[in-house]
Amino acid sequence: MSDLDAFRMEIRAWLEANCPPEMREPVRDEGDVCWGGRNFKFKNPAQKAWLDACVAKGYTVPDWPVAYGGAGLNPAQAKVWREEMNRIGARPPLSSFGIWMLGPALLKFGTEEQKVHYLGQVARGEIRWCQGYSEPGSGSDLVSLQTYGEDKGDHWVVNGQKIWTSYADQADWIFCLVRTDKTNKYQGISFLLFDMASAGVSTKPILLISGNSPFCETFFDNVNVPKHQLVGELNRGWDVAKYLLGHEREMISGAGGNDRLNTIGGFAKRNGLEDPLLRADLAMFDVDALAYSAMGEKFLDEIKVGKAHPAQPNMMKYAGTELNKRRHELLMAAGGSAALEWESEGSNGGSKARNWLRTKANSIEGGTSEVMLNVISKRILDLPGA
Ligand SMILES: Cc1cc2nc3c(=O)[nH]c(=O)nc-3n(C[C@H](O)[C@H](O)[C@H](O)COP(=O)(O)OP(=O)(O)OC[C@H]3O[C@@H](n4cnc5c(N)ncnc54)[C@H](O)[C@@H]3O)c2cc1C
Image (tube, rainbow, N blue to C red):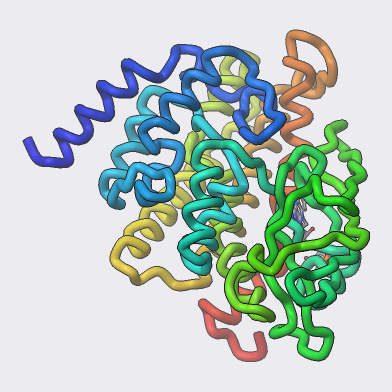
């Protein structure tokens, strides 16, 4: 038996002993997701037990170093971990912007003290983070952002407004882009971390078409941010921001998923599926989903050998989010009028319709599809005039 096979057996046995049956059910709605944080309320004891077991072994962030709360798995072992989780349909023990976005940026740009302090908190699910990038008028053109931090010696005083800040009203801390030099567009932005409970921070939820309110306007009114909460170099926050965006795009591209036809096929079967045009659409979707999975595997292999194109996450983001929108269009088409139910118990509070509407945002959040195509044409295809 190879070392990797032995490792797989070890993981399989550990999961069998530690992943509660309730945590092997598909995530049905937001309440099933464990976001962690100071104010997080566990849905049931199984959700907490699953998180605690994974934290103890470093499995909330399996490929992070042990010193920062991870399990120190190498890429091959981390793949085994994912495969074994998928095999039993285990839910992620912890979902967090700290894991998907801030963590990779801190691993690359943070000081040793910042890594030990913040990454440990992220790995244990103690602090929930939100992302303060977009501003009114600065979305795709992010570098035009105006939120300003005035230098006061040992701290900055931050004033300004962010928008579309996901879960700002539930987050404990924010990673935030702040202008610290008004004379230099690109090299005048700094990447700051601060507590959302700081004096002068306030949030106002924005209601979405799905009936949910997952994000906010966020206001900073004379917020004091100590200098040691700067990540990377002063005025070079754009480098950190771009690196983080690559990870955000990878994360959002995961929406493309790899469940191919399982969800749609099962739903369609229960509801009968005779329309030949819909059947053809399903088959086409299945082929594209398979191609998308293959692209993801190729990308992971390229990362492993250090040969991934830096703009690759833009391709994954574009393809994954467009695919996910199609998946939900098909689910709605296959479900007929029943899929439009909005509040009934049988429809789990209208989760199908609400999830379908939520996917409309996939090709906007983290950079729009048009902007992804611009990047692909310029940096990957090297098209003239792009
Ligand atoms: C669900 C959701 C969650 C989000 N969460 C966060 C968050 O947590 N934190 C955060 O900071 N932001 C967040 N955002 C904001 C998101 O990053 C922005 O919405 C996105 O970058 C687009 O910016 P914008 O909304 O200002 O649109 P704009 O930039 O104004 O774009 C409007 C339209 O113009 C097009 N366009 C713009 N520039 C170009 C160009 N150069 N070429 C071609 N077309 C172009 C766009 O594609 C789009 O169709 C979230 C957004 C959504 C929808």
